Image (cartoon, rainbow, N blue to C red; front, side, top):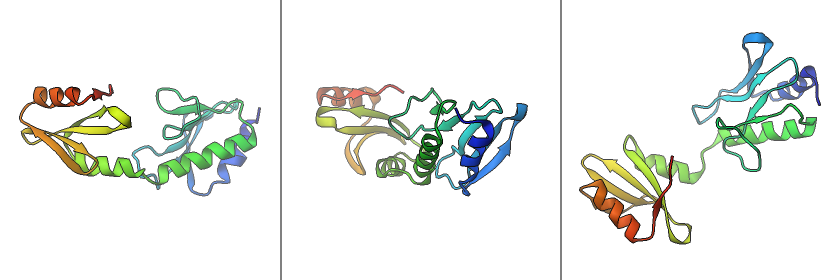
Length: 161
């Protein structure tokens, strides 16, 4: 296990991260250029060597409900790799997120999955329930029940939040 100082050495080698001292001697490191509200890359690095790195947009890591990975037992190379990946994941939004953001705006939305991995968005806009496939309007309904019936008839099921 790396010591606190060894972990600090790896983390501070990333010039794009800004150190923020917090309580009990713990340290956060933020990526202020993040395209998400999430800015903490390193969270609560403790003098005992424990701490977390944000991996909420990454696969292959065992994250908690906040998208954080415990780095207590990480090697120098593992720590460097996850920090690089975390920064990269916060640097740009995947195309599907940008499309969804463009479609959803301020509307209430639900994601539905169906045959062959298809995903549709059900968005409440003004007084209608609109179904989108990407940027394309697939169908529009006056009530949620009508939209839900249509989606279920087409073999789609709602993803739970």
